[in-house]
Image 1: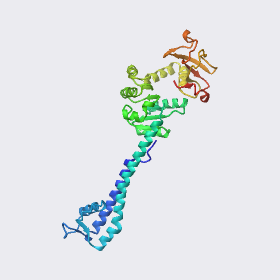
Image 2: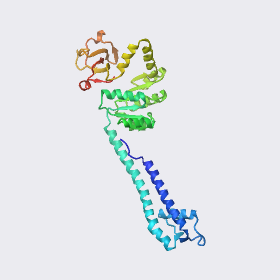
Image 3: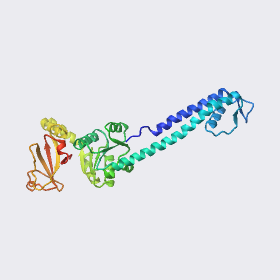
Image 4: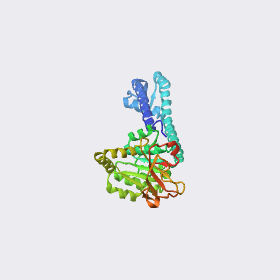
Length: 337
């Protein structure tokens, strides 16, 4: 959803052209000032200011009649040159107004239609490295899911447009911006902003507008994790400490760090996936390519070997490592976790 030409830019371009036309008529009048008479000062030639004044009231069709062409040459110039310029000037004014109104009307129509079509989509607040990577991971599991990007920088929005995503310029905790992104119909909200303060405000506002969306946010300080959960975040990732732990692991046990990095890279080697249990008594591992690492039941995390989870129930979630991910066959049962 894009507007091909900025209405403000169109106005500035036409204003520049209108100014150019005004100056053309002014210089024509000034160079031929001997053929014009100022009724207030009939005995002196027009000054440049008089010529500018006459040109202004003439091409805007005001025509006070205090300065008039009296010679045949001046009247010929007015007929052949000034009158077409006057018509072009009026067309510029009317055309600019109509274009701005038409552009705004088309944009509002397309915006409303686009918002009506949005459902169960992803809203990314902050399209930096973290936001972009998170969205890529979600779309790698579900290529059909729609996404809307909210950011305050032109570079981020241009990158979103380049990837075929709709972008909105504004603050992610602004109610109007979130409404434009269809936040009430969103399924996932990724908050990856530059400051924890903005992140907290955004999570509070999103949860106020959408009680059911899954809000995943990143933060820099561990002291803000609990505050984000209280604000309504479903999951909080401390980016600095998580990266630090992987760095420490890479120094102490580089092979383990390589495995963790492999797990975080979708579509290559090992992948973490999730599936819902459809039937009571379903096995924890369905085939040799799955290695179960956790079972989620009633919001609690259990190990696959725990006594209470040896028999799976309908609605349980199995978190597993998949070595041979087949997105076409597993899309209906697997999604990002």
